[in-house]
Image (cartoon, rainbow, N blue to C red):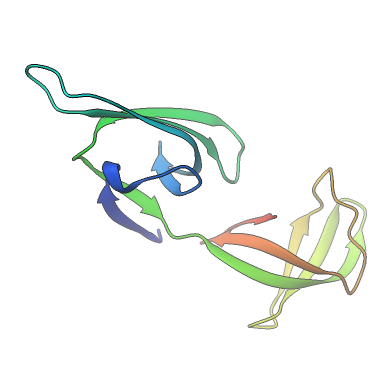
Length: 124
C-alpha cells in the first residue's frame, strides 16, 4: 500500500490520513492541552475518500500515524454506457472502466480529474 509515516501534529484539515486501514480526508482537527500527567491529544474527524464513511481518531500529538499517498490524475472520457464509463489516462494512455457518479453527467471527449490509490479510483 502506498503510504508514509508522519506525526499526528503535522496533520491539518484537508490532508489525508489512514483510519481503520482506509484512506480518509480530514474534515476537522483539534488539540487538547496537556494535563498534569499526560501529553497533548489530537482529535481527528475524517471521511473515507473512496467509501464516504465518517471516522474519528484520538491520538497523542507526538504519535506516529500512516498517511496514504493518493495521486491526482487527468483523464479523458472515451465512452459512456449506462452506469459505466471508460476513461483514458492522459499520461499512460491506459483505459479504465469506472462507475458514473450520481451528480455527474459526463460526455465523450470531456476531460476529468480523478484520484487513484493502488486499485481504487474516484472521480473528483
